[in-house]
Image 1 (cartoon, rainbow, N blue to C red):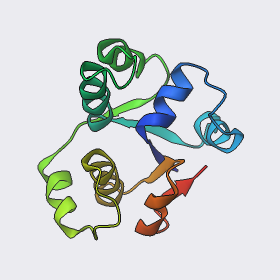
Image 2: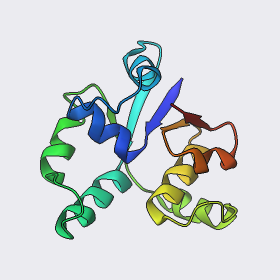
Image 3: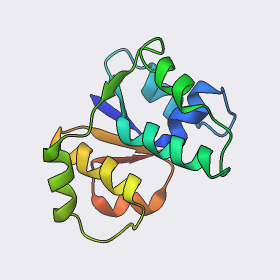
Image 4: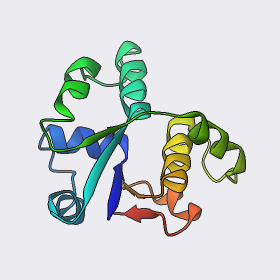
Amino acid sequence: MRVLLDTHILLWWLSDDRRLSKGAERAIRDADNTIFVSAASIWEIAIKASLGQIEADPFAIQAAIEPSGFTELPITGKHAAQVAKLPSHHRDPFDRMLVAQSLAEPMRLLTRDATLARYGDIVLIV
C-alpha cells in the first residue's frame, strides 16, 4: 500500500514520540507499504516553526526523509487542482493538500485527525 504521512505522524515518528499509535507504527514499519512525505508537510513545519508554534528544524526534517526509508512527494499542479474538487470538511490548507495528493496519486493518508475521515476511505485514522 502507498501511504502518505500526515505532518504530525511524521514529527512523532522522527522524535519517537509516545503519541504515535501502535497502528501508525505498524503501518510505517510494514515492508509492504511505501511511505511518502509531502513537501506540504515540510512547508507546514517551516511556517509553524517560524511562528514559534512548534519546535522543529524544517531542514533537519527534510534531510531525515530518505534516511528514514520514506519517499518525498513534491506538490504538483495536478495536486493543486485536485484541491478544488474537495468538499469543505476541513479548512486547514496543508491538510487539504495532503488529502488532494492522496486522491490524485492515489495513496492512503495516515493521520490521527478524525475530521479528515470525512474525505472517505483514502484516510486511515490511527
